[in-house]
Length: 340
Image (cartoon, rainbow, N blue to C red; front, side, top):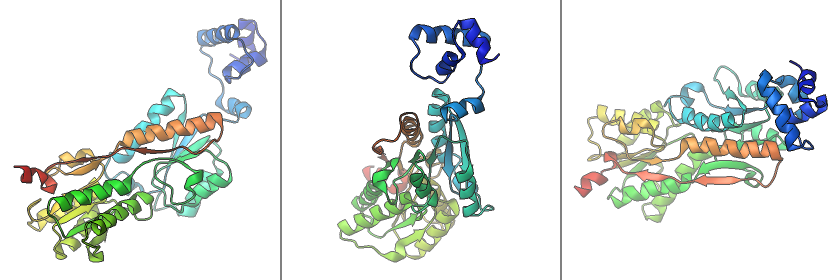
């Protein structure tokens, strides 16, 4: 079935059918309904490549995660949940999704070159990129629609993003531990190449300073948001005689818990621990993990909504959204024991 066939059945010109399919103006509502009825009757599906030539759109957006997949999907929840939020919006607007995953077997320059040379995407969502990732600058320089799922490290006034206040969330965790009487508080950081990791470390530092405890650099272990990083970081912090640890995320906290169990230490009596994200694993470990809950799926959904608005309506003032977080109190921090 061709456009000419649709036009003949609807009693209109081929150009009118084309305008209806591409959702253009200058078509009366009565004519639009008549054409759409014929399209529905015959089950016509426009050729995507041909439509892209006319509209300059492919109805495809990319999601770029410049991470090694084994780290990206280690928790089997955070990124799938983020992608669920993205796909909920793309499906509702008849967009397709193209996923780009960084890989340790492909060098960064080649990965970037493949994305830049791709012509399928109308725009992109970038998640967990380094603050100086050259893709961001390329998209800015070439006016390509994109939205970050974190606070940008620079050019914030030019970039749309959806995130949480990682600084304040981390600050509240450390202040909570201090209120419980903990004084030698360590941290196992996230990936310090991205702003989420940087902001959580900054919040940890500021809380200690504001409480008059000062920052002991020997109590800061780099964890990279991974289980192995949490395990190794906790073993190092045990030797520093910490009485509490703030882990960069729940997967890091899970690794830390394993190290504590192997060392025969009691949680929270000997060492309290708090994570971040409130993944399902937080209630599956022993003891259940105190953590910061963030709306992961909603981050993906809102970022996609903003991106589609930019694609379909053109660039406007950057939209910058901070979603709320909540400190979820469970057994690992000692607060429940104290209440008892």
